[in-house]
Amino acid sequence: MRLARHGAAGVELPLISGADGAWRDLRPVVDDLTPSTLPTVLAGVPIHALPVVPDPERFGPPLRDVGKIVCIGLNYRAHAAETGAQLPKEPILFLKASDTVVGPDDPVLIPRRSVKTDYEVELAVVIGREARYLPDTQAAAACVAGYAISNDISEREFQLERGGQWDKGKNCETFNPFGPWLLSADEVPDPQDLRLRLTVNGEVRQDGTTADMIFGVFELVYYVSQFMVLRPGDVINTGTPAGVAMGLADTPYLRAGDVVSIEIDGLGHQRHTFKEA
Image 1 (cartoon, one colour):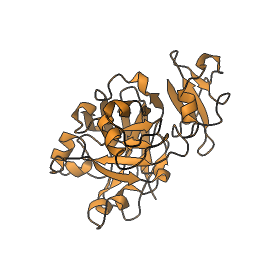
Image 2 (cartoon, helix red, strand yellow):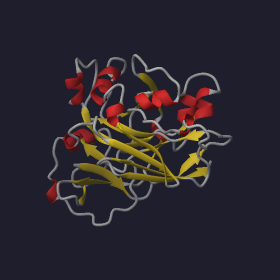
Image 3 (cartoon, rainbow, N blue to C red):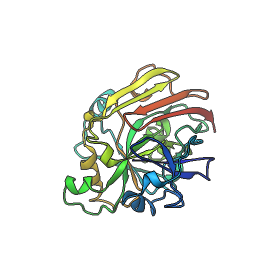
Image 4 (cartoon, rainbow, N blue to C red):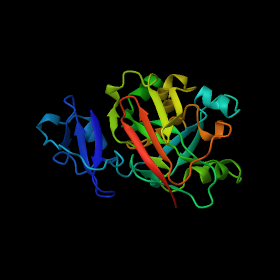
């Protein structure tokens, strides 16, 4: 099944879609899709008994009030190579604030004084049940609710040249477009066999596959659970393939007016225009 939210920003309404592909109003079951209602929906919903929504409006983030966003750095072999970094021996973790989340087609703001705003198409893993000191990757797989698209937008000067940790370059407003929908885990036979694509103004910049991940999806969920408790509605951004502006010589960073389009197999599309903050 697919889970989504549509309507004006801040007042989105929940949607669900089953085998027939039609979007249906989820409000007879839950008021909204949130970390607290996600387990109820995952437990089973009479989808075909719900009213059809023929023309959903703007898609917002597929979850309201997303929990933690745990991000994984340098998790694709080709991306590590293009940035001149050694392959990490353990996953590199950093956190992104939940208020960076916007809808998949919403405008993205380039921070003031930014000269190196960059894009990163990523497979987002949404947690569906508590993950705490998981014993193995099989247990980790059982904690995954589903998958979505994230764009882990980064300001590279803030991230790498201004001292301290990466947080300054990762948490600017609107820096995590998310959605358009959450595809349930049972609809993804192998999360290590998904193609990710990103274009800037129609030019292909990233075209990779999750098979190039250094640490796979279930390994990441298992690993993160050893350091922090993952709860329903938490998100893991699993890293980005090669092709970011930072790794491409003479490739311009994003400026106002640029249009970024993203696609991951089965997870829909994003398209956002960049504007000055």
